[in-house]
Each structure stands twice: as structure tokens, then as C-alpha cells.
Amino acid sequence: MNSLVDTSHIQALDSAHFLHPFTDFKALNAQGARVMTEAKDIYVWDSEGNRVLDAMSGLWCVNVGYGRKALADAAQAQMLKLPYYNSFFQTTNVPAATLAARLASLAPTVGGRSFEHVFFSSSGSESNDSNVRMVRRYWDLLGQPERKIIISRTNAYHGSTMAGASLGGMSGMHAQGDLPIPNIVHIGQPYFFENGQPGESAHDFGIRAAGWLEERILALGAHKVAAFIAEPVQGAGGVIIPPATYWPEIQRIVDKYGILLISDEVICAFGRLGHWFAYEKFGYRPDLITFAKAVTSGYIPLGGVMVGDRVAKVLIEQGGEFNHGYTYSGHPVACAVALANLDILESENLVGRVRDDVGPYLAAQFAALLDHPLVGQAETCGLMAGLVLVKDKASNTLFPADLSVGMVCRGHCFANGLIMRAVGDRMIIAPPLTITHAQIDEMMGLIRLALDKTLADARRSGWLEANL
Ligand code: PXG
Image (cartoon, rainbow, N blue to C red):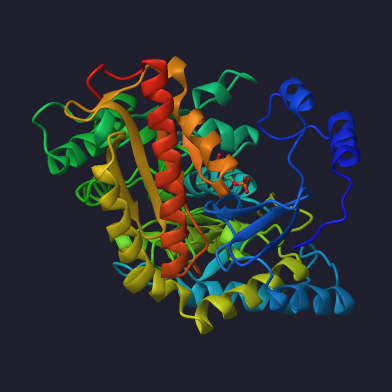
């Protein structure tokens, strides 16, 4: 692909005026941002003509891949017909009503609970704010206003608004802005590699980690706990895949104490794990499901909450007016793009393909990475994958954090045409669901190249034991 963009001009405008999210502004300005200009399939091009294989699907969202004309056509057609109208004052629009019904039909009924209703927003963060509002309203309406506390987990990511960042368990975010807001508390994450005890099986660890929820409920007083929120698989936290025993035990505990379960599927829904929704894969029964990102494959902002019967019934039958909503709740263009996106996911069987074909293929390739001297653990779940860089494989000893080995490895990925993320020394990917076997092979070749270059750096710099 060819680009006629004047890189330094755009970088100058960018430095002077654009405050980027989660960015050290001064450091970026000194270096200049990479200017992305075009994209097709699973590849993105920058203004210098460099092609990169985008193994992160943008930011976990471009599930159908780049360059889909059908999505652009859907947006254009809707913009020409009805670009905007609000849903506040007893009005609706065709795409929003149609999409709500379509999403309801995609969310399977489990244990007699179904999801017939959707509350729309424009992002995952807003959706989680809506969750807090709905959960507290639900308990108020049931005459239990003291049920206010929402339990979340350390290293969870639930967004960047005041409520989203509070629900999240990122200490760096809490440190800026007096967070968390009141009545949000955190328990430990189910990360076996780091938190499993010597001799403990993943099976036992999963039950122990879920038990932290019960311990906290009892410590707080069950009558004060409103809900538990969790990602099925933690994304931003580093693709933390819980042991198989974790979710069933969580379900047992929330059922025992009657607390609501919020499944934050902003990353995991719409095929990422080989199912339309991730609770289906793990077999639990949420009351509320947060979605965003891949509902439109990131082509246009849209998010929302799937509201299960238990909550919907109370809000609808007993609630009167719900004093909450956004200008763009049920935006017709965003909903039209979502419908076209769901058409692609369905007609190309992308969800089934992850479950039965490319997911298992990626799992086999990732397992093979364990032969690399730096890889202490490598695992996948659908099309999410993570590996841990270690100093010593025999004991799975991590590198000292101040060496930032993950960032060194990420640097090699970027320099060699691969977007792979580093969360500490956990290297993670989540490629578009359209990725072919040949493209997975290409990606694995680039991952191995980056690992080899990182190993060479480690040897040269004396970061490893002398005999490695
Ligand atoms: N919940 C989850 C599980 C997410 O992954 C959000 C909520 C918030 O969505 P919005 O649309 O408000 O950004 C997310 C977003 C990262 C990274 O570094 C991940 C996200 C956002 C930004 C960075 O991996 N996920």
C-alpha cells in the first residue's frame, strides 16, 4: 500500500495538540507517534509504508478484520437515511430495536435465565457505569438498599471512567484520581502461574481463588454485597485464563449468597473465545453482560449491557423511570454497523471457526513455543494467547521487573512487523478471527524471531545464568 501522508507534519500536529490515552505525553512528543494510515485484513500500514501484522486486532476489537466494505456501506446508508435520533423521549429507531432483538437471540439461555433486554452505550466503560447504576437500583427496588458493594478483582480491567477504573483492579489507575470510589472492593485474581503454591494443582488453585470471593462476602456481610464483576478471561491484565474449576465455584458462591454476577465480556464476546458470549464457554449464569468493541469490530463506537431476566423484570415492573442514559444510547449508525458486523460473523462462521479450527491450531502452535529457552508458560483460550518470559525455565523464575524484558521483546516485535503486547513480562496476542493457518504460521515466525532477538539481548547483557 502506498501513502502520501507527510509523517513529520502529522507528528508535529499530534505532539502539539493530541493528548493520547494512557500515554506519557512528554515522552511521546520527544519520540513522535507512529502514524497509522491504512489497513486491510489483518495488516496495518504506517505513513512510512511499513506493514505490520496486527496480532492485537487494534485493541481487541477488529474481529472481522480490516477493510470490510459491507460495514462502510451500512454506515453510509444509515447516515443518509437517519444519521441520528435520540431514544429518550418515547422514540426508537429501526437499527437499535433490530439489534437489541438480534443480540437477545444470540445470548443463550442458561439455567432458565435468558437475556431479552439490552441497554446501549458507546463504550465498555460507560456500560460498566450503567451496570453500577442498574445493580444498585435493582437492590433499592427490592428493599435492600444496604446492598451497595461490588466486588471485583486485582488486575481486572473494566474501563477508564470513574466507575470503570474503580471496578478495575489496576493500582496505577487507582493512584491517579482518588479511586476506587466508595463501595467497590477487590479480591485476588485467578493467576495460577504467579499465585499457585508449590505442589498445588491448577484444579485446587481455581477453587482456592474462587474461595477468596466467599471469604470477602463473609467479611463484609452478605447483606451488603450487591454484585461480583469479572472478565471471563482477563484481557488487559495479560490474558489470564482461570483454571477450569474457577467459574463453577464462583457460580456456587454467588448463588449461595444471592448476589448478582456481572460478566464483563467487552473483549471475550463475539467469537473471541469461540462462542458468541463467553459465559457459554465456561458454563456460568451471569445476570448482566457488558459488551462493546467487537460488536461493531471497532469500526464505530458501540457498547452496552445485556440485562438478564432477573434484573430486567424488577427494573421494568417495579422501577418507574430509570434516571440514566446517554445521548448516543441506541445510535442508529452504530447499531446498523453492528448488524452488518453480526452478518459477517454469521455468514463466514467466524465464531465456529475459532472454536473448531483456528483456535485449536493456534493452541498447538503456542504449546510448541515451550521449547524456547525464554518461554516459561504459553497458553491460549480461543484466539487469545499469552506467554511468560522467564529467566530460568527449570524453576520458572521471572526476570527482575526493572529490566522490562517484556518491553524489549515488544520492541523487537514492532521492529519486525508484528504488533504483540507486553503486560509486564507476559506477551499477549488476540488476532482477528479471520486469520488463516498460513497467517498464524507467519505470526508464529515473527514471534519466534522476537523471542530469539530478546534471548540474544539477554545473553549479551548478562541477564541469564551463565550457562544459558
Ligand atoms: N471492560 C473490559 C473487559 C475491557 O477490556 C473496557 C471494559 C472498557 O471499554 P472502553 O470501550 O471504555 O475502552 C475494556 C477495554 C489494554 C486495553 O491495554 C484494554 C481495553 C481498553 C484500553 C486498553 O489491553 N479494554
